[in-house]
Image 1: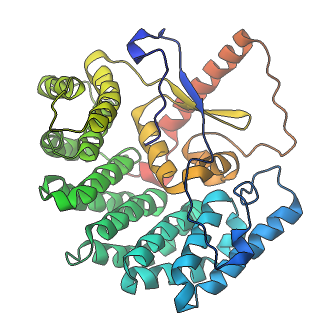
Image 2 (image 1 turned 30 degrees about the vertical axis):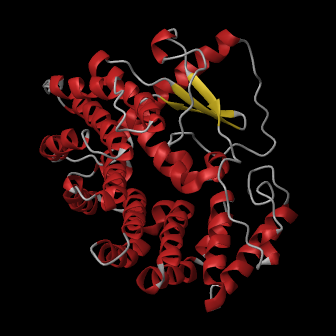
Image 3 (image 1 turned 180 degrees about the vertical axis):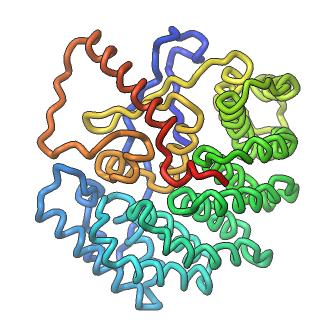
Length: 409
């Protein structure tokens, strides 16, 4: 998960109105070199990023590279390399209209390799499904109904490699978030809960993926039954805080923070989080040598934010700079959504924040800015004033606008 810390120390020591603001690094994703497909391996990350300022010729080159990569999918000897190439292009470039015309072809190849591919091909194909839905946005509901049964069948196949099953969970979470209605969302959340109790260390990736996907769906679903679901799940989440795997512990902690946020928004009743806070405090102070030093540091950094929110009511104050714009991460639902989407897009996150209409709708960023847009910097007081107005507008918009997910279940 993308985490950036102030060099001066813990967030306790900063002023209350200070935000942890950082530039998203578009070069942090290592992409395997694809030497056998010369038509698209020669493209740099910058050339593959279809932002508003990109020239028409560069866009045509990217489209041609994608066409070449799709053609390679028909060659059995090249399928893994071709899948890598397609994924790289779709993660770095926003090309919704172009993808719409080829969605059936891309979905068909992805489904085929999820059904019958080897581990590498299967996991690349589940990522392709996620990228396809990010490109298409909410217009992908028909594809969702076609691909969901395949992903569910592979997820339930206990003979499948745990890593592949985890990749199916990640894809199902994203596809459901983008295209499903409330009943489908609630069904998947109930399915994922069954994995929270797994204890086999070989299945840690499945548990962590399930917690992350469940959180993503909770951040979006708006149904009267979600509070009942939350109260049923909390004991499972509490148990996951004591799991041996650091990723599971962190995912459980961040999920609990989101649960707390949802309960605060939905009801005036106070849930007894005292025992959970005691467990969180122990994780922050963990010095046990049975956990690796790196794991303890990662855990301390992540769980501290959770503890400060649940125990002290300290809200998140982070922002991500991209181009001339800024994304404020001021609540746990937004952090969960951002982290999940960034896990899929990697170094292409900036391009999609700037130019992908669906992603901009998710984060209430408004319409895509014109290519020649110039933002006047203004004084600090003016920027603070307009940022405050924008934050209030986003909060109001989130409360009244979640399209079909606001339907009563």
